[in-house]
Amino acid sequence: MPPLAHLGRRVVARIIDGLIIGIPVGLIMALIWGTYYPMGDGSDARSSVFTLVYVLAYFVYEGLMLTRYGQTLGKKAMKIRVAMLETGEPPVGGAGWARAATYTLPEIVPCCGFVFWLVNVLWCTWDRPYRQCLHDKVAKTVVVSTTP
Image (cartoon, rainbow, N blue to C red; front, side, top):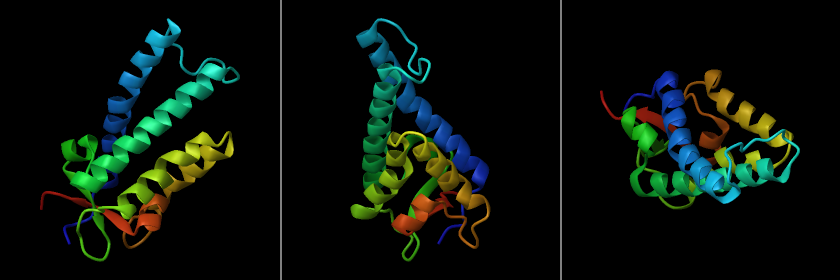
């Protein structure tokens, strides 16, 4: 098994992936609505629709990329990948989709979805020995470096 990925690389990879999905979704929604203000004041339907579209797009992107390549474009740029804990192989099939679902879909739940997401992504800061987030634990995966 390659060495575990540095947490900083994981964060930057997520930021890159967020931009890869967020910018096109934002532009498409701006074309549909005629303006770009996706979050509104948090009480209007536009913010809910934007969140739903973004989360579903990110889920499909993450699931497809992990099950086909073992890494997203952000992870590829940061030279990290997702590996099955037991074998080191990419998370093909259900494991990749379970990991993507646990990371993205809780965001749809108002209020507590964000809290779960926050706990999920922070989990790797205290988890030992594998530095797994909750979405890694669900799928039995780890994030490893692609370079020695």
